[in-house]
Structure formats: structure tokens, C-alpha cells
Length: 189
Image (cartoon, rainbow, N blue to C red; front, side, top):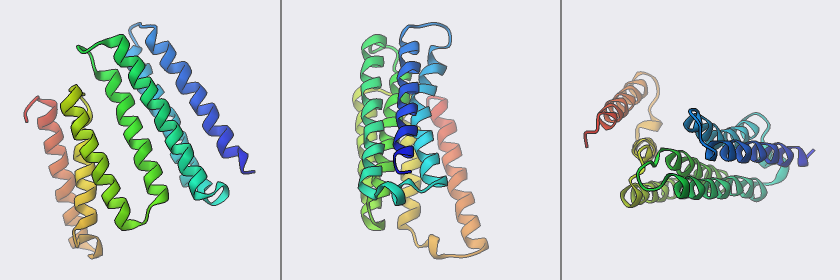
């Protein structure tokens, strides 16, 4: 059933569109609904990929195109949120932009080999840093932290280690990310 994955992604897209529309109408839960709109369809696509292996059924390029289509919807959502919220409130825009970058990265993960994947993730980190600098998006620093940690891990010799050394390295990395995100939440640079 190759069309099942496409149907599930289409249903997810429809639900995200409805949630974004509801968030645009305002109300006390508009931030939570916007976060749900930005997270629902990418989560469905990742679950389909992990548990079903849609790339094997549909083909790598077609499945990556699904991820890019989800990313395009998130860009449209970010534009709509930006138009409604203005320059003063960028939290809903941040949700949609983070989701778009994650979808682009997901599509790249599907397509590329290991070396090209590291380069592509680094490019999305640079794009995220530029977007944060240009538009002052509140949550972009967390994406940058996660991306830099991922690229650093992929470029280090530590993935070849086994046992306690690898656990110690991962513990140190996660500790640094937690401290940096704590300082970021306090407004420190």
C-alpha cells in the first residue's frame, strides 16, 4: 500500500492547517495550538519513517519530497503567523520555522550519505543562525545548540568508541547542552 503513507501525511497536513487556522483566530491557547500545528505533521512523518520505513515503500526521493512538502507548509504557516503577530511577538513564528528546518533536515537525512549529511546539517545550522539574527526568533538558539552538538558528535572520533568512554562523552555533551539552554532561557548570551 504505497499510497497509505501519502494519505497519512495528507491527513496530518490537513490537521496542521486546521490547527494553524484556529491559532490565527486568537484566544488563550493560541500558542499551544500553534505548537501543535507545527509539530503534528512532522511527528506523523517521522513515525511513519521509523515504524514503517516509507522510504523503502515509496522510494527515497518521493519520501524526501513528502518531508519537503511538509517543510513548505511550515514556511507558509510562519509567514501567516508573522503577518498576524508582527515584529513584537515571534514565538509562533519560531515554532513554524523550527518545524520547517527540522523537515528540511529530515528530508536531507533521507537523501544523503553520511558525509553529505553532516554538511547539510551544518548548512541548516547556519541558516538557523541567520534567521535568528535577522528576525530575532526566540527558540532558534535551541535548534542551533542541538545542531552544533550533532555535527560535533558526527565529526569527532568518539562515535567509534565503545562502552564507558562513549557514555562519558555523551554525558558531557548533554550536560553542556543543558547548561547552555539554561543560560539561554535566562537571557544570557
